[in-house]
Image: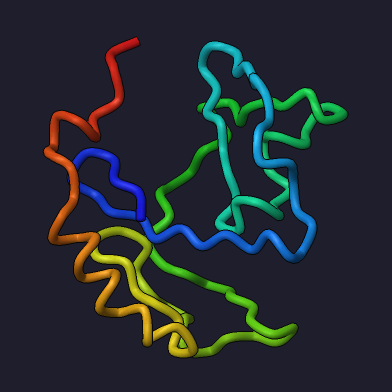
Length: 123
């Protein structure tokens, strides 16, 4: 579970699939660009792999909206229809095959750090 300001994010790590090294970077993003990460953090082809692995951002003028829901999700090499339309903001929603983690998720949300500890520093 990760917290940023008033939002909570569910993070799952799949170290068995190979993915990227645990420690990467540093990655620098130019002014007026946004660094983007895929939803499969350890296996996504996102800002980290652009420009030959040097990393890079998306220019502000290329951004057209905000992610609000899951539109495609894979599990076990097939589409996971149970996650279609799941909101990406607010309380995280576990995939149905992980519902056994619900008590731990509830505990993480209950024991979350204070708001001021989850706010990024001013640039």
